[in-house]
Amino acid sequence: MNKTALVTGGCRGIGSAVVKRLCRDGFNVALNYNSSEDKAKSLSSELSSLGYNVFAVQCDVSSGGSVKKMFETVRKELGEVDLLVNNAGIAQQKLFTDITDSDWDKMIGVDLSGTFYTCREALPYMIRQKSGKIINVSSMWGQVGASCEVHYSAAKAGVIGMGATGTMIAAGLQRFGADVRYFSRTRKPALEEAHGYRWMELPELLADCDAIFTCLTKNVILMKDEQFAQFGDGKIFFNTSIAPSFETEALERWLARGGNELFCDMPSALGEHAERLLANPHVNCVGQSAGFTGQAAVRLSEKSLNNIRAFLENN
Image (cartoon, rainbow, N blue to C red; front, side, top):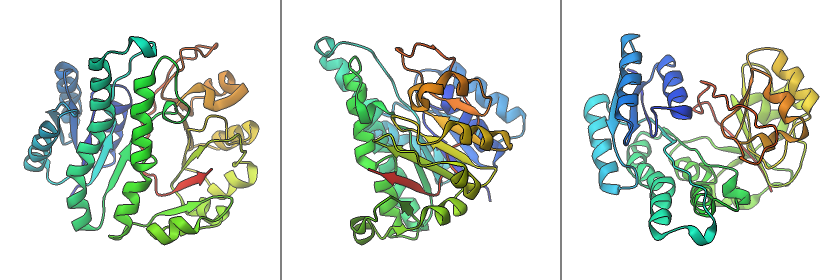
């Protein structure tokens, strides 16, 4: 029996790319939208005509009651949710002093509360089944802040704080059978004692992963030729650091071998060679800083995030 995935904000951009990939991976997919009904139904019809089981469901994720009803509808149409991708979000650029109460409430409601509400609905079934995946899409601005997006930065920081892009939720699921692993340059006994995480040496971790996720707060080169060789091919590398966590030439050689993809959230995560790397068809930038001088075009890949099995943590 096929598993069911729910993708919030699934009718365009990153969300639609994830929906398409999950369909190809054999999932029954619930495609959530709020106001973009035409786009949602168009995408649902397109995928249904190809033989995929897709269901468009309206929901304002900033409302806990609306989220509860959405899950009830999805259960009725497709069954329980095995994979939740929290992609729904809004953004707004305003000076701190110009942000109104309404602006603040709407941003926190969609970008932060919406993630909480959907996770709260999804977790009971996953805990009972001792399996399931939740992926929360955040932003580098949740780490470093953006001067004209204070409310957006605060909301995304909340998402990171709620789960360190999934780690806290993974910790909860760990107690019920999930296999969570981590690497850091110094071992973190607190993570192991508090959550039961399993520490692994970097070579072993790389060899055992389908995808790696780096979230560095310092300019640390983690991935060189040796590490990319250990990681292997047919893999996904997420670099969401404030600076590159890789050697550029080593990355390019890894990408040239075929079947490999790099994701970054903002061009700034690619460092001084950002424009060159963005010309590579296997480099996917899912966001763009308004101040980036190259104004590189945003390209979205259909690689989904559901292959993440490990988090590389480095403070």
